[in-house]
Image (cartoon, rainbow, N blue to C red; front, side):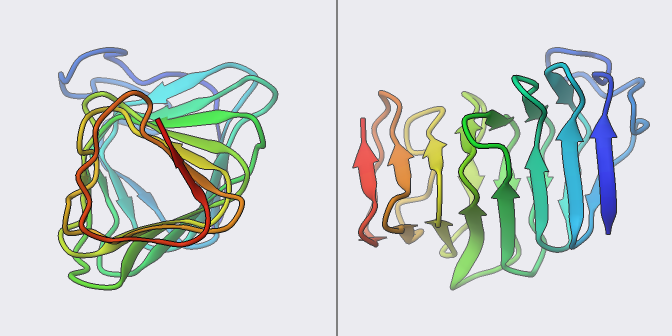
Length: 178
């Protein structure tokens, strides 16, 4: 647990080439429960793979958004990510996977916006996604498996962002928009 303020981008800054340098090195970034991960006063992109081992907070300062462009593995625990900065968009642009086979794999909390990138897929298997607060914006068609339960709580939203989504299970009193 603790806090990390990201003050630089990783290299390369685009594409899928391996990370050759960056503010957190070239390996996998492990985010433990209780960790806070923020961009400094500029928008930052990390291409490192990410391993999540517990609930964490993510955000930025002012207009300083953070993009996690590497793959994100949620592990075997149901994870809650709090997007702490209202009005700020955080982007996940890598594939998101989990070891959970049922229940909720990921809960998005906090009033910030989670933008799924155009190359991002939520590979949650039969596990679900809950939008507890704020908004998740889809980055491509069928970002979420049709077998995953999508729960959108009151006051929260899932924005298809002009994309199609096939879903066999939707719950909650929140909004879904396109």
